Image (cartoon, rainbow, N blue to C red; front, top):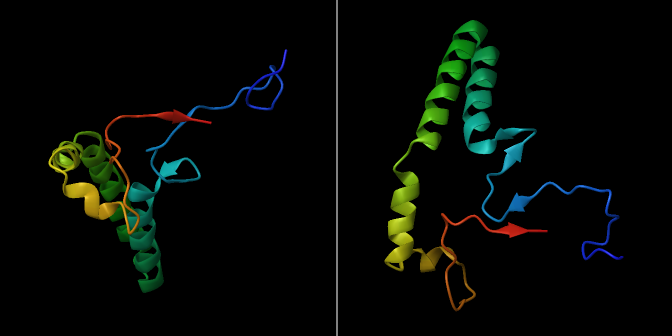
Length: 106
């Protein structure tokens, strides 16, 4: 009884997707980096509490935009019209992966 992943059958590997967001600890990088940058600049300037308030409000605004945004639909429309070929890079591939379809890999 050998497993294909190389580990024992008692181990659990957390499923990851190809298009998962980049995480810093457990937070999405798109959400935490602007908040931390504002907080650091405000703390350096002596306005820690103002920076904290702006960072917290920005955190929830970015979270709501990422959760309910038209951005994903726009990316899909660009992909369907073939406009994302330039994002592939210098190497030419046969197909461009749909950015909205979540694919598992291990």
